[in-house]
Length: 416
Ligand code: ZN
Ligand code: ZN
Image (cartoon, rainbow, N blue to C red; front, top):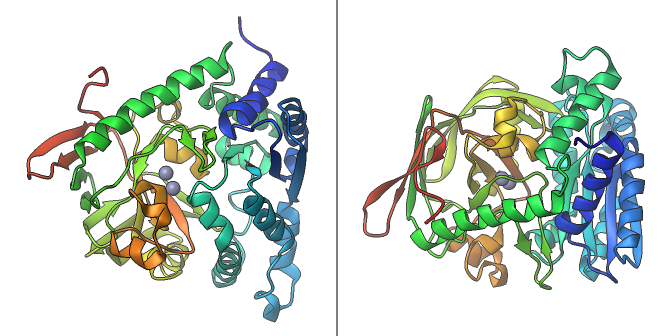
């Protein structure tokens, strides 16, 4: 028996509150949402109160307002920082509120704006919000991100749809499917899924590979892993002991690379939607951990500006493995949205590493974290490199090399 739209939407909101953010009775919830997602946001507010929230604060954003600023504000005004949402996030995360974001944005929103100004605004707001990103990255709060279709995004994913409504409804179906909200027992399905990811991350944590070697068309890359790295993925636990699934959907296991031990060339396998632009067919060359060459068939200037954000953005901060057989990969869709596309493909991120991925990392100062191989930066941006043609080897501490992925799938048995 298949569920109707309302039932799937209810499932989705319920999953977001119970499995995603893991809201605890008596907690406050900070909910970030685009005005275009108001119906879903309201449903989540209802579910949150029914789950025992003391207060739900909704922080609204609006693509049209963002675009208006770029189009109309005085040229010398772009160092002004929009603080209303950022200050609320700062207060809320300091207080230990649960944090949920509903992501919905037009991937092409800022494509006609000056990339230098877009980068300047982005950097200023990242700088201003650094205490919040630190708290989230250090798992001081339980949090999660989900997505909802808006017309500008849906028509980009489904250009062949017969109407805007048709595109939106197709994107809803794709999201429900990727998030298991179309199943009779979505909560049970999520528990089974996060258990499987736990088995993989335990396997990798036991191995403690010192190095991963990637081979694929256009890719020949060695990525060193620091001593005492920890693989995460699926469910995580906040410092207060609250389980949450930060990204919905999620198919990845990830850890941090050693910031200075990345050598070789890596080629993208999916476009990267960043700062309102679509960067396509790009290649990064690394020496001693640093990007020394950037090439892109489209929007190379946007990619170069991302890499030039600060020192940490010239280095990697995340290494993530995703099997090519993941449901999102099998859907064959390009979502133009990292939350989905990162779950279709093994990937890396330039910029900030996640402190909990290093034993003792949360207690370290930035300098200590960097010295141990971690990476600090204002930014963290994932980009996709995996494919059915990718092989990955792991190098054990004694130098032995063993296959980890072949043709984009695990080369070891998950039943061990
Ligand atoms: Zn990732
Ligand atoms: Zn990431």
